[in-house]
Length: 423
Image 1 (cartoon, helix red, strand yellow):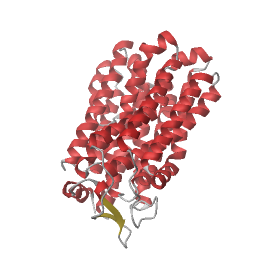
Image 2 (image 1 turned 30 degrees about the vertical axis):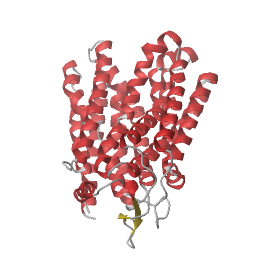
Image 3 (image 1 turned 90 degrees about the horizontal axis):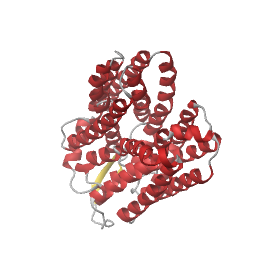
Image 4 (image 1 turned 180 degrees about the horizontal axis):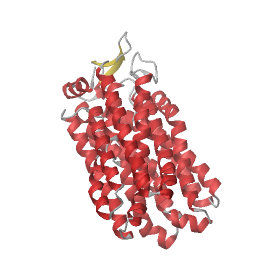
């Protein structure tokens, strides 16, 4: 059963998933059946989607804030330049280690409780960072914890959206949720001129505490109660075969690794090619905006049945790879030409990938995305670190390798689509 069937089923399904109980057939496939029992009161989809995106932004903010205040953090604590990379690596290490367990926990206790728990820990960690951190070791340890609860937040929001949104609006909901990460990048960058330059690196983390608390309130207000667990389904059991979920994860390793490298090194590489620091910074801001706009448009198209999620992911990764290869020309014009495909395609696929996984795993969307997200966290951790080593040798060499990683991810996604079609 391919994504074409999946998209058609999404368009044909009336009502919201909250109004149906998922159950497994004897063959183990999850599907929906209408029931007459009254479902718990379902909040407006806009409220649920808003809760999901603010939870996502608040959860990933510690990582992007650390990168944004790198200069102030380095100078205040007397750290080496490489220390910031180590600190951010700690965040994604925690996420990668906790993703599968987080998915199982979200299936067991429900997405609402999981998100509230994770955001509470996020706010506590940021508070401790503000009040106590004086050494790199303490910062890394706290970011590992923040990364672990970020993994719980991400899979829980996936399950929340899958259970609360109408099937015909799930693609756009996933796109909005995945736009929370580039939005957090923009927020972290804005915190530097507004707070960090004049008042130090701790104040942006104070904002992060307030953001996490505000997200807690929004989630608690928007959801009220958790949905009942799916009937007749073993908790935390995805519908897709483990080998297929691992294929999603493998694609995510190469795709996320390349995307992370683009975000981490675009500005410094553009400067080395002759672009002034100010315009080079604007390149990243414009690229982030392109990524957000593309994610939203792709999600809307998916809901209208005008694309096949995994096949579109493959095409986007291949197109993004070509855009990054243009950067390897190492000329100012090359960064202008490659910006749209690199960000509008190569950094805009996560929403569609999660949409495909959630549609195919109605019984346990959190557990399923917990597996796939593990690959994304491995890529987000390793991609920028490896790119840094290559950049020290040659920026064009780095871009060639990053572009090749996106192309490999595109080929992997193409093969995945064929395997899914053959089910």
